[in-house]
Structure formats: structure tokens, C-alpha cells
Amino acid sequence: KLKAMGVNHLDLDLVLDEHHENNSQLIVAHPMEFKRESDYYSPCANTGFDEMMLTLKNVYGNDFFISMEPKAAWGKTQKELNDVALTNLPSTILEELLKKIIQHDLHGNCAVIVEINEVQDGHELEKERSLLKKILQSCQLFRGIRLSDDAPLSMDDYDMVMPTIE
Image (cartoon, rainbow, N blue to C red; front, side, top):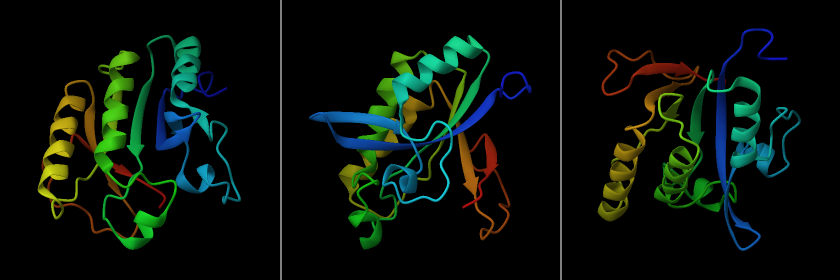
């Protein structure tokens, strides 16, 4: 239905299920959908990333674009660290996302919405930066803007500003 309406850009929230059948699986879901706490679910909620890519390629061929927001404990707040839908080390989900971008040959068909927290452990920070640099060889970098955020005064290193409903 979306293709028939001319929609070819989809925005995907991604959660890393670290306990899926004894290994990690990237899941298309908002954290509340993943935890089954939402009142509203998108049609693709809790779909495996591989299955989602198969569906997109079957429907669109190569004529689609996805912006992906990997969900993690970016701020390292206690609330984030206690949330089962947020992987505690953001580098873990970035590493899995990089593998999937390569596996599904998404070069030129994707963007990531990532804001690395500069105030954190040096080793983790370097790992996140390194993984993001590799991801950006295939994807654009979008900046998510919430209603509560001030309008950005510059683009910095971002390719586009992506409004979000959060």
C-alpha cells in the first residue's frame, strides 16, 4: 500500500534483542513496542531486521530509502541502563547494524540517526566513533530533532535534520 501511494522512505527504530535464541537479533521496533508496553504498534513492529529487508527488497526492488535509529543507552542514565530494550553499550548495536548494512548491501539506501555521547568512557567512545565512521561509508547521517529541541543553528556533520514525534 505504501509503494502504491509513492512512499519509499521509511523510518525504522531498531532494538537489539540480545537474548534471541542465544544470540543477538536486530529488531525493527520502538522500545515500547519491543517491551509490549505500547498502546499503538506500527505494522512492522517487532519484525526481525533481516525479514524487513527481504520484504522491502521484494516490494521495492532497490527503490527505497530507510533512516534507522538504533536505540541504546546513549545518555548512560540509570533509567536507560535499566531499560531492557536499550543495549547498555551503544557500540554493540552499532556493530550489529554495520554487519546488517553490509549484509543487505544498503549502500546509498540508508541513513542513521545517531548522536554519540561525548562524555563517557574513552574506549567505548572510540569504538562508537570507529563504527559510525564505517557505517557512514554506506549511509548518510541524520540528526533527530524533537519538538522540545531548539532549531539547530548549523548542520555540523549531519546530512539532514529529521523531525521526530518524540
